[in-house]
Image (cartoon, rainbow, N blue to C red; front, side, top):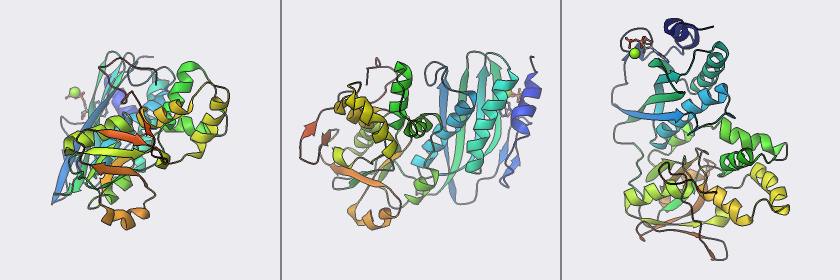
Length: 331
Ligand code: ADP
Ligand code: MG
């Protein structure tokens, strides 16, 4: 049954709010009225998910709602912001109650985890696409940028990489992963957890930060070019994941994956939404409590990223992550 745009906004979006004190006026008028705290800079970021480009028929509406919120909060996390508000632009081919209900459940599930309020948006008919804009606060002058890495800094990853890539790889080929670890691997792809609290804890410690959406090599590449530095990744130090190991072991044994493929997944597959950051050696002690892993160091070989294992052997990994305007390679 088709529902009106007005009913749709009321039923699925405007009545399901957080009730933040800094929202003077939320959904329903021509503009929202918002009150950032004094002394805070406003961090603003936007991200779009397009049907057939960023997700496919395997993505449930619940996961899509969750993920649209997660990718935007991840961008705020990467600059050290505390998220507060989002707006939602929704383009739908049709107004389907079951779809909208599941989508808004997923969206609000993640937003409420972080006390974020949906304060407005736009709804129109067309090919399925979801755009969120996220707003957050950072104490003035404390934002984490891509440009602050210096030669000699340590390089870190906030958690395991390659899980979402492995999930996508197996789904696209119809290859089953072994349970119970498969659940954790698919969770990484379908319900990523943006590192919102960690991003804020990195203020004053990290010299540069980025969230890993397109793969470690590609996103670290952005830090290196913005900072005018190079990096060496110690491939034996990549954060371990029991689920990733348990799922890849049988695939390596039966020849569907090589150890090189496994490394390529960790280095180049996107969608894990961990943080990659740099920090001086003096910050090691403070960072030790945060569960992050040191994976290499920054040097002065401008724009050059090398991958070296514990024995000092260099690994060349060819694809530098997912690029929308380059042809998609196999791994
Ligand atoms: P207008 O035509 O004046 O732009 P709309 O009919 O587009 O108004 O929107 C009415 C109200 O509903 C506005 O406050 C707008 O921010 C909000 N809104 C519209 N679509 C969404 C959505 N998908 N999610 C949240 N709020 C929405
Ligand atoms: Mg409008």
